[in-house]
Length: 193
Image 1 (cartoon, rainbow, N blue to C red):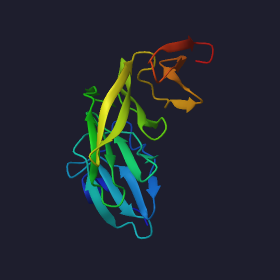
Image 2: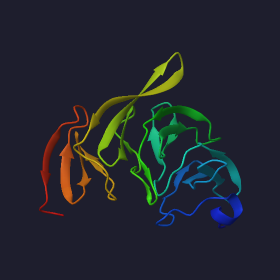
Image 3: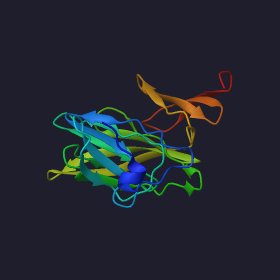
């Protein structure tokens, strides 16, 4: 099966075209597709039938990620204004955090979210800032809050990665290592850029 999200679902083609990779949870394929009726969509993996749309936020080339919370799996998406956790079965919003990222003609300053274990997520959301978002449960409800912000790793088209206890990624042409707990820049080099 195939779907034309612009013609069939009213998505707006991003400046650089669609670059989102799908996430698959059970029998649902999840994509960040943009559009006024919900910027994230869940499709039946066997038939391509639209199951749900969610999240009122603009996004461009970010990919949804699957977060294992131990007792459940959820999909985390990062838009131009918010990072949101969704139930992959029906797209129900489980939690959200407004980050107030930057928005420009070519897209926004966000990249795909990066899980740091089961209760933290690293987000690059602006040209000059990134943050670690913490997830907690209060009376059965999930809540998200900013644990720390760092300027040690900022906007780049290259997504960051985590190895051991550190984050690695690019800020412009500089490879950087950041401590995700403190936000401290550990080192930066241009040797590889």
